[in-house]
Image (cartoon, rainbow over all chains, first blue to last red; front, side, top):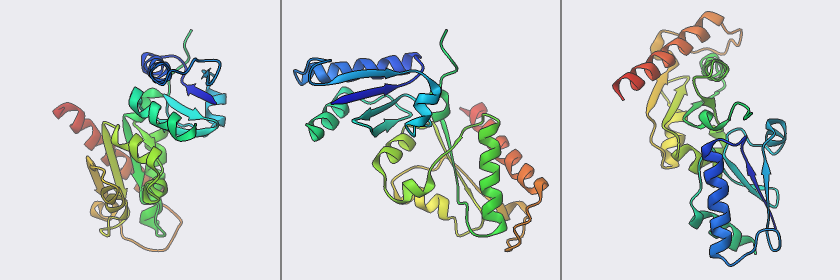
Length: 83
Length: 129
């Protein structure tokens, strides 16, 4: 599973990444093994993914959230749905 | 150095009806102009109508949800409300003295006046908190 966190790196983007990592931890998943967390910081790369507002999260190429910070519970739910 | 973040864009979302009349298209062009001027971001009314969860949740998190309708039928406002969203600012183009027709040669002055009206309302909202 590839989880992409899109955002140039402001505090909201960082909070989103933190919540993604927390969700993985809560699910007992090791980042890099079962789920690869990739930060996408380049605006062109972000736009190419169909994201117009950050922070955004994509799981295996599917946008699950944009323009807000998802809670760890939400991220957990999205991961569980795709496992 | 961090590039300009796209996060700020999510605070004010603008939904024009983009309907099939001069007024619907004036609403659309005004939303484009407001986006260009950095007042907010034009967002996917059709996606909200399709009940796309990602888009609905994004709109719920916005500080202001602006609906610009071309006529009193208020399709943009009603579509947003149907999806459970609270419209914070609503403007009907015909309320501003622009007559609805099917002549799509839009008057740039009409677009500017609707843009200014929305800006005025957003400005008032910011002042009143």
